[in-house]
Image (cartoon, rainbow, N blue to C red; front, side, top):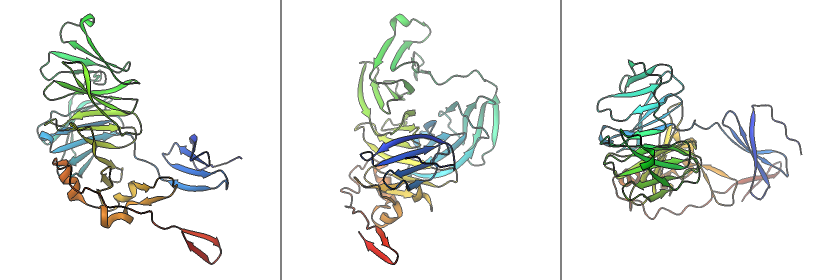
Length: 343
């Protein structure tokens, strides 16, 4: 079989569903599902948002900041809605300072060094040139006595500040692939690491072991952080989602997705969601053993429950449980002109 598609550059092709279909990935971010038997495209998914590069909390946990491709999203963590979309005027942000206590967010870009952007007005102000900054492989503990290094392997190392004595370092092993990001807890007792193995691990730094592993991302994890209360952790990934997790149970609470137009959706693992006016188009329902995809709008009456999301982010994990049962909507097949059959 030869399939030709000149619409855009094809980047990968993989078999799915017992080799009955091929999923095609394009440079534009589009996905297409090709039926081998009919040699026709049976599903076409539009371009996806870019990967999440940075995540973190501001203002004592009331705001959540996510960044990708130079765009900073500001989320309200209590209502779990997107408040602002800020354009930094660059494609690459190398560092965001989450210690800000006012209405400005400090960030670093390779071209312009340290800058700040006002959350309300979007106005950018230069803070000084520092193009050599590297915040991607070393973080300092809150008390300044230790630092963690990572990024070259699947190991995390803890070293005493000021000594540079690697012979006394403590090494933490648990990931199967390279560590991509790390973060200290506010009290300095724990650390988070994200990895190319798609997992997040919480470490007890004093005892030297992993206390929790967070599973759910579909692609490598790019950024991790604790909430100021340490009740939640937040992560970003190349799968384009930001996720908030319960730090104690290790379970995912919600995933957040936004696109460049400003549309957004927040969804729980059991299907409850809230979204902007057109945000429900960003995710689809897929039932087991089916190639059919369904928009979230078809389940709006039962599952668009922003109050459930607010309750769970307030610590009430029982809100909305058990979730309503859902049935796969009927589909229409055309066997011959003028004949419609519901299945």
